Length: 375
Ligand code: 3HM
Image (cartoon, rainbow, N blue to C red; front, side, top):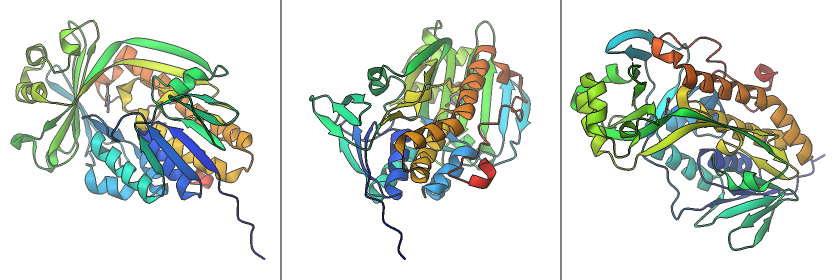
């Protein structure tokens, strides 16, 4: 006896960022036809780095991308914290996590999407969705699908078009300038394959998160209060930053020359629920969070992979979406709360901050990865 083959289901996805690419790959690998719309003329990401924690690496293993990340990224040996020029802790987190540049991660996901048969359409802007299963495009056309996915980021227009989804927003006093710099000679060698989190708290808080992202690049996450205008500028204000971090003057000098970086203010958006009818949100559109713990992309990737798994488990789309949200929401809400708390209190500056509770999200195992462990 042969099992009847499921008819091909179709998804229209808005936004080719990390979450949009990941959900597209995961669905295409499970037999869906997927069209992914990117409003920009090119599929790419800005010049910064990113951490992928154990939760994300396990999910990326499911869609066949983890190995390429290990080949192209850096596994930090430990997470060091430095306060006012004094090293206060060097934490071994007890499991592997990876650092990679955003453009590289993005290119690896885009390659995997094309290989899985995802149709990527650039210069194609979605302006909303209909819960009946229609992605509404800028030219006024509507694209029908079994499932419409809004992966269009923290400012999601797909989300904002869906009145059934309640939004709760919170803004914070901090923001971050993110840049990539060439790796200087004195920071080559494996001993620099680590994260160093440099802080100074007075007169106002500033932080330089130093993360090796490959043999040629270092990522700097430069956090400051947004009221500190000079420290919130791109290009980086070399004088404002080297005054506060004199020991990092050569690094700050390079940051001043960096191109392609970006400044963002911290914010949290909690959306309830994450779906209505045949329209669903994944990634920052559903759960943008403060970057203080470097967890946003990892949570989006985990949710994207598990969404495809839930849709495989339940033929009924509504049931699949409800079950998926039931299992992913607690860890997602937890990550938002913890990163918001860390942003407000700056507890990480004191060192030894990575308690088991803080690492709960980083260690999360979804049903897509292991039904037994997730149970
Ligand atoms: C990885 C990471 N961690 C923290 C921040 C921050 O506090 O803005 C940014 C990051 O990319």
